[in-house]
Image (cartoon, rainbow over all chains, first blue to last red):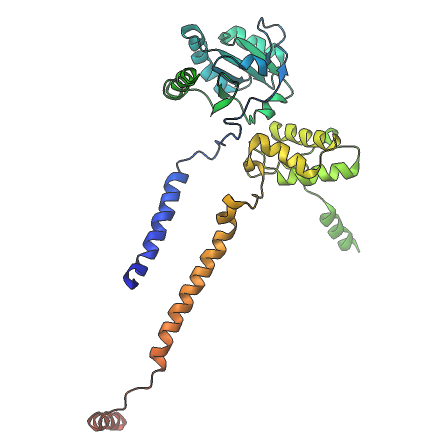
Length: 179
Length: 155
């Protein structure tokens, strides 16, 4: 018993080291969403003026597993991930919806004209009302919504080919098989 | 006198505000509540800064939201809950005391108590050793001791 007491500091150190090992590998800028497994907030957004796509509402997001991509023309990482979304929209049938975040309509229009439009519908959220309801704290963010309109996953930051192939698409397949 | 005035001026000066004049509410009581709430909410962009101090656009949007909720008649708690429902407990600069945060709040005191208990046990164990009356010297040892003492006294 007394011997074991001497091991106590070592045990405490091991616990602390464990915490640091996990904690220091996390990105403190990545805040977990509290909306996972909750229904998408009720909303209705107008289309981006001048873009030939309808606006976005919570009703649009029911029926099929979908990606909701928060983007803005002023956001450099959005530009980085955009070609991937364009390619995904051409090569697969996964619906991608856009949430245009705090953007001027003419800027968004020009940006989409330049880089291509992968979105089936785009909600124009100039005033950051709906994005706050989604708990968005920066662009880009991408939500995976299941058939029932429940948020199942959020990716913060630009989508990389790795994130797309290893996380988002497998999740979409899984959710499609679910019901 | 001039010194006193200068001192007063320095003390009265408030730090620069991130809250823009057009954001403020006309009702001073509501505005004061909005300011108090904004002090408690963390800005998600410039983390660890309250939204009240932050110049980030998202902080400005949240300040506007807080004021809108207050004008709509929400209580302070309802406004906090509204923001927490969207951004999670993370936005609270002061974490709530709940079952899953007991370790956070009380852990340090428990560790302190353990340390004090350990120290008390250690101290208590040592003391009897020191206080034990020594075994009296044998006649032989007594003789050797006085011989040594005598030698030391000699030049």
